[in-house]
Every structure is written in C-alpha cells, then in structure tokens.
Length: 305
Image (cartoon, rainbow, N blue to C red; front, top):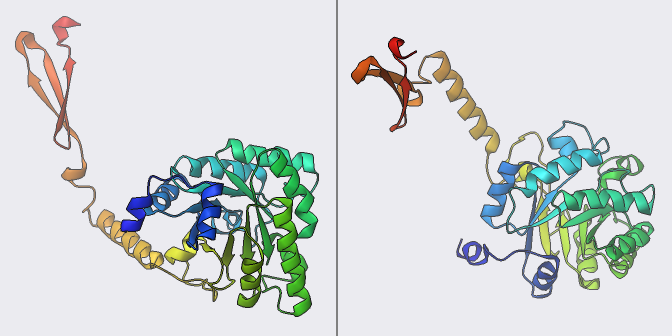
C-alpha cells in the first residue's frame, strides 16, 4: 500500500514504462470497459489500463472478439478515459480496423487516441511491422501482440498455446524482434510456453507484458472480471481469482430482493417527505427534508394568486 501511495501521482507514460522494465520493476496491467471500474483500478495504483476488444465477450456476450467494431472501442475508451488519471491508457484495435490499409489503420487509431487512449495495441507478427512503423511516424505508440492472437481464433482452431515446437517458437521470437525494430514500444505475449516468453523478454529491450505466458515477463495483464472472480465457470490455468465477486454479487442481490419483498427497503431513512407550515399573511412554506438538509419553497396563499 505504501508503494501505491508513493507512486499515485506519478503519471505513467511510454518512457516511464520502458524505464520500469529496464530497472526490473514489474508492470501491472488490467482491462477496463467503463468509468466506474476504471476509477477503481486507477485508484488502486495499476500501471496500465487496457480497453480490450475482450469486451466483445465479457460485455457484449459474444463467443469471441471478432464482432467488436471500432465504434464500440471508441465508446468504451471514452468512458474509461474519464476515470483514469495516473495509469497509462491503451486501447485495442479491433478486427479489420487496421488490416485493410495503412490509411484506414491510422484513421481508426486516431479515433482511439482522440477518445483518450495514449497508445494502441495490434495483433500480428512480422507482417505488421510496416504498420507499426507507420503508426509511430504519425505519433501513435504501439504495443504489438504476439503468440496466441484472439483475432486469429479460426486459423488457430481455438484458443491454443502457441510456440510449442522449436520451429513455431523461432517464428514468434523473430516476430518480436522485428516488431521492436519497427518501433513497437512494448510487446504483449499471450499463450506462450514460459521458456519462449522468457527468451523474448531476454532478447528484446522493450517491456514484455504476459498473459498465460509465465512469470518471466516484465509485467502481467488480466481481464478485470477474471481477477475479481465474476465467472466461476471460467477459470483457465493462467487465471488467478483475487476475490469472489460472483458470490458477493449474488448475496447482495439476494438481500435486496428479500428486503424489497418484505417491505424492509426503502424505509423512512431512504425517503424524503414534506411539511407545510403556516406563515404570516396566510401563505405556506413547504419544507422538503432529505438526509438532514432542509430546502424551503414558498407556496402562495389563495389570496396571493
């Protein structure tokens, strides 16, 4: 807690993240999709907040991230940005928002930056190097996402660990190096064997953020609902629940249902009421009481109308 308080007012920027990695200071990253959760995450002292296209699954209820549009991402980025003061805010570029042309990619990335993002994340390997370079040239920082790439779920045949064979691992390691050379300020390593993630982290000079790739990256990212334990039916190996939000939420809602049905909520404590007092001249003053405060309103007497 003392660490968080000490660092609370220090804005996290791209150069700051790179200095943290070089100094061996672990980087924390969490997803957010709305203002309220973003405010809580920022208050806790998280270093990076990602408006992830994972919102397609955890917010919109899709089976994958592919239906998410750039308009969806802009909307949620704008909401999250209002709750962030200290953390670095990054937004995912959704499927087909950057693959069609460099010009369209810059336009869409620009929309996210204007909505409040301070960097964007794109999925892909060496084939995305030119785009990373191009985005950098127009002033948009890029995190490159390698390994398990959710937007390629149909090619992979599901969400499967990548880089298990030496050949596949070498391709991913090469992707990481090429993307760094192209100007990526950071790498997200998803679904990789620990040894492969470690090799990439040791090979590149930019921060690596892992998810399902072991402890030897410069930092870690989790989906906020996974961290809080919102879905007891979803717990892949790489997820650790730090709370049981599902249980807490169900209990709270159950108490609410019971109180309403039994007439225990709302009570007089949760209500406002008025009192009318006679004034000189026959007028009335309406007193509206609310949590100890008193607001008065003059009510005209019939003779004054």
